[in-house]
Structure formats: C-alpha cells, structure tokens
Image 1 (tube, rainbow, N blue to C red):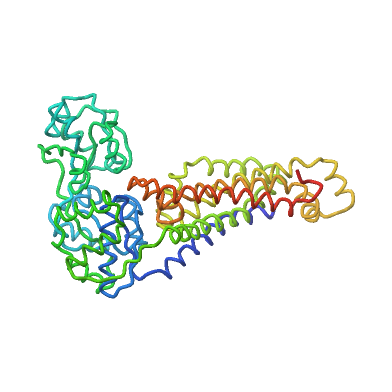
Image 2 (cartoon, rainbow, N blue to C red; image 1 turned 30 degrees about the horizontal axis):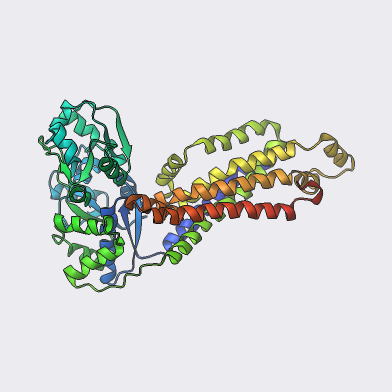
Amino acid sequence: MHGVPTAWRDVGTALALLCLLAATVRAQGAEVVVGSKTFTEGVVLGEVVAQTARAAGVEAVHRREVGGTRVLWSALLRGDLDAYPEYTGTLAQEIFAGQEVGTDQALAAALAREGVRMTAPLGFNNTYAVGMTEARARALGVEAVSDLAGHPDLQLGFSNEFLDRADGWPGLRRAYGLPQTDVRGLDHDLALRALQAGDLDATDLYSTDAEIAAFGLRVLRDDRAFFPRYDAVVLYREGTDPAAVAAWDALAGTLSADTMAALNARVRLDGQPEAVVAAGWLRERFGTVGEVAVASRAERVWQRTREHLALVGLSLAAAIAVAIPLGVLAAKVRWLEAPVLGAVSVAYTIPSLALLVFMLPLLGIGAAPALAALFLYSLLPIVRNTHAGLAGIAPVLCESAAALGLPAAVRLRRIELPLASPSVLAGVQTSAVINVGTATLGALVGAGGYGQPILTGIRLDDVGLILEGAVPAALMALAAQGLFSLLGRWAVPRGLRL
C-alpha cells in the first residue's frame, strides 16, 4: 500500500525527466531559433530570416514546418522560438481579433504588450483569395466570390487553418452569404492538387502561390473586400540579438509579390531546396555569400534515424520503468486494478494528434511534447501485459512459494515476474513497434525524426521524400520486433519460451 503514491510519482518523474532532457537540448542550441509555418512560402521565408541572421554573425537555426499560426505564436511567447515570419492580416484577424489594430502602429503596440516586436513589411502582400481552375470558372460563369452563392452544389475544400480562422471560411461565408455546407478541410498543397485534378471546384489560395500561373487558376475577385492586407513581416522576441534584428530590418521592402511567387515556384515546381532558393535570392539582392550545405540522402536519413531513435528509445525506456511497477500494482492491489488499467486505457484512446496539441501549451514545441505523448502511449500494452502475466500464474505455484516462507518481494522477483516475463516482454515489444510509427507525428511539433521528410514530401508532392521517411520507419519497426524476439530468448526462462 505504501508503494501506491510512489508508483504514481514515478509517472510524473518520468515525464519531468523527459521534458528536462528536451529542454537541455534547447538550452544548448543556437542563440536564435527561427520557426516557420507548414507551407512552402513560410519555409522559404524562415530560411531567409535564419540565413540573414547568420550573415550578420549570429548563430541561428531554422525549425521548419513547426505548425500553424497559433502554434508558432504560442512558441514565440514561451521562448521556444525567437523569431518567425508572419503576416499583418493574420495578426489583426486571428491573434488580436476584436482589438483595434487597423494600423501598423496599433499592431506594433499590441505586439509590444506581449513582449514581441515586428519589422517593417518585407515588401509584398500575400493576401488570401479563392480560386478555381480557369475551365471550371468559365463553364459556370464565376468571376467573383459572390458568384459562388449561385452554385450551392459546388465542392469546396479549404486548408485546415483557413477552415477555422476568423478571416477564413467562417467569416467569408457570412460576408458573402454562401450556401455551401459540405466543405472539406485538407492540407493547402493537397487542396491545390485536388483542384487541378477536378476533385474540388474551389479552394483558398495565397496570392503568391506558384500554382496560380502554373495550373492556370482563376483568382476570384474579392468584390466585397473581405480579405485584409497580409503584409509579410518578421516577428521577434524582445531581447533578441541586436545584430540579427538589424539584419532583419534591412529586409524591409526588398521582396515584391512577383519575386516571392518566383521563389515559391523554384521550390514547388523546380524542386530546389528552400535553403538554396533563399541563399540565391540573398546573394542576388544583398551580395550575401554564405555556405548552404545540402545534405545527401544518406546524410538526411542518418540524421533522421538518430532523431527517431532518440524519441522512441527515451520514451520507451521511461515507459518500461513506470509501466511494469504499475502493472504489478494492478495485479497485487485489487482495489487499484480498475483505476490503473482505466487510466492508462484512457490515455491510449486520445488521438495522437490531439495528445500532441494538448502537450504544446505545457511543454512547448520540439522533442518534449513528442516524448511525453509517446511515453503515455507506451504505457497501456506494458501495464496490461504485466498485469495479465501476473494474474495468469497458477494459484498453486504462488501458494507453494508462500508455503516455503519466501517473503512477498522475493516471490515477486524470483518466481512471479520470471513466470510473467513472456507476457511482459510481449507488451514491451508491442509498445516499441507502435512507438516507431507514432513517433513520425513528432515532426508536426518540431521534434524531427522520420516524419519530417514525410511531411515535406506531402507538401512538395515528392514521393521520394515520403519514402525517405516511410521506408526507414517501417524497417525500424521490423528491427524493433526482431530485437525483442531475440531478447525474449535470453530474458525469458528456457522452460517458458514459446
């Protein structure tokens, strides 16, 4: 009974150690951490911001494709990021919705109250728009957004963020009285491909999307002036290195909309890496000469393998240290059986994406939320199998051990756990295999691993990049299964091996 609070403290201790380890990585990292959103232009601008800081002599790292507006904004306020590219319209309509921030001065004042500063606009307005293929728009006679009201059966699909933003679909629908209700939410780049393939009739666009010209899309006129200006700026925390801030200020007014669209096209259509595209523009515009190392496929896979192994190994080790004692408690203390099994079952039923999002306000971006989520997901198979293994031991064996006068702790260590070891090891094996797959989602919060090339490949419609993450992940899962099978031959008593 005295072990009950200690066991539950182990859960908190394991989570705290995982988070401390992840925080140590951040503390030892670069002086300036730049984030970017999960679309091509955001990544290109993130590279521009990071490389500009490096050219000014400031150590900087770029955390690519961290998430949407709210994720990056929260990370900036927490200090997980020092800077990221943003748009004035997004700040006014999403972050400071309902506040009077109609001018740059008012917006700057609102940011200052949060301990954040912004540069002057970089030079282009990447406003939202609604687009259709030219052929479909011509066939229906649609030229403006208001014309969509006359076609209630149109299949609309919008990027996930646009679908829920105040300056996105909810506000657009009210402003124009649009009747469509069956609207899909999907990734922005996937929506553009669906539009081209004819699976969607209309979707949201960014005015600097390379696909507008490449796919021959018609940008519908915003005839009720619903969308505000979305001037690109750099947001940064107060106290950021002055040399980096001065370098970012020098970017003001240097990027036109046509130039930004051309940079996006080099990535989206020509397949050039974002870092190379950003470096090329900085060299042309400022004469900046910087080293841009483009890793080979083997180097990228090795880096992602190390990241993935760290996520899986650390979370699984912590789960084993906590789950086996919890399984023993559930088997030995009858009134704890239902609460323990129920608690780990509830944690397992939370969708993995939702669990990651729940962790963000507590742990920030990076490895910490991914490690915590993977730890919680690893508990159930190990706890259940430990409980089942101990509960399945024949009562006569336990009674014989007790009759010999062996203390309870000795019986558990020398007889019961060895008898339950096949079941326990099977639970660990299951958790390991599941962890390898689930860890790919860590890329959504900046944790790296095999999920990073998968996400980038989806964004760029690059099957090779998708396979660069998917194939090693599958091989690692098979290796984990094989490793624990071999371990079972050594750890499980000979007479209990299958």
